[in-house]
Length: 436
Ligand SMILES: Nc1ncnc2c1ncn2[C@@H]1O[C@H](COP(=O)(O)OP(=O)(O)O)[C@@H](O)[C@H]1O
Ligand SMILES: [Mg+2]
Image (cartoon, rainbow, N blue to C red; front, top):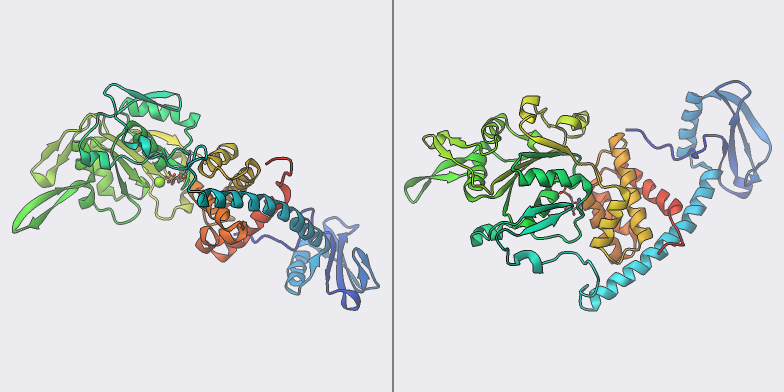
C-alpha cells in the first residue's frame, strides 16, 4: 500500500509549511537547491502567509531525507500553505456539492412523503411486467438482440424468475452474450467484483421469463450440494438432486458464481455437461443419465480466470482455470460500466439525482477502482456500493454521513481515508454550477 503523502501539495514538495499563528507561528520552507535533485530547507518563526521571518536553520537535503522531514513535520502539526488553500477551496466547492445534494435529498423526501415515487419516470423496480402473459414464439429485445421468451412453466419455475430491474442498462458489450444464450453456448463472464456479471444474466432471465438457480463456489458449496446426495427420510433412503441436475431436468438457467473458487471435483463434473446438450452421469445414483431440458442454460462467473489472471492476487484463493477447461466456454470480459453509463444507471435508479451529482459520483467510483487496480485500495468499488451510497445520501442529504455505513465501515481505516480524500477531491473539482 502506498500511503498518500497528504502533507505534500500536488505540485511537489516545494513551499512553506507552517503551524501556529502570530507570535507562535513556526515555519519550514522547502525550495529547489542549485544542486540537482537536492532541496534547500529553511526554518524560522513569525511572518504571515507566504512571508517568512528570520531564518535560523538553512540546509540542503536529498529527496529521501526531505520525505522523512515532511513526515515528521506532518506529525508535528505543520501544514503546507498550498494545502491550506486547497482546504479553503474544498470548503467552498464542497458547499456547492452539498447544496446540490440538499436539493436532491429534498426532492427525494418529497417523493417519499407524497405517496411514493409513482409519478417519477423510470423509478426503480418494475413489478407489473414480472408475470405478464408470455406468448409462445414471442421475443423480447435485449440490447440489439431479439431473444425468445420462455413458455410459461410450472408455478415453481415461475417463482424462480428474477424480478425485472428497470434501471438495468444493457450495453453493446452484451449483444454477443445474448446471441450465445440463444444458441445455447456455455457462457463465462469474467471481471472484477460488482461489475454486473451475475445481474446481467439475471436481468436477461427476468425479461425472457426463465427461472434462475445460483450456486456460489466461494463458500460452502460442496459436491453434494451441486450434484446431489443420498439421505434418510422417514426410514427410507432417498436421493436428493443437487442444483445441477435440478436445473438440467427443469430447464432452469444455472449460474455458477465465482467458478475460479470451485473444488476440483465440481470442475470435473461440469466438464461433462459443458458440451452443448452434454448429459450428466450421476454415478452415485447407479449411473443415471440426466438429459438437459432444451431451456437449460449454464453460466459461470469468475473474478480472476483467463484474461483476469493478472488480478489473482486481489482474489485470494482463486484457482487458475486451465485452458482446456476454458476452451469449453465462451469467455467474456466484463469491465465496470463507463462513467457515463454508470451515471445513467444512477439516474435511472434514483431519478432525484441531478446529472451533475450522478457524474461526480460515477467519477468517484472510477477513481476508487483505479486505486484498487493499482493496489492502493484493498477494497473494490462495485456499482452496488455506489448505488447504495447514493441512496443513503438522498435520505441523509449528507454525502459524508452516508458514506459511513455504505462504504467506510466496510473497509480498513487506510482505505476509508483514501476514499475520503478521493471524494473530497471530486467535491472540489467536479462541481459544475451550470449543470443541474
Ligand atoms: N449494467 C447495469 N445496469 C444497472 N445496474 C447495474 C449494471 N451493472 C451492475 N449493476 C448494479 O451492480 C450490482 C452488482 O452487480 P453484480 O451483477 O452482482 O456484479 P458481479 O456479479 O459482477 O459481482 C447489481 O445488483 C446492479 O445493481
Ligand atoms: Mg456475481
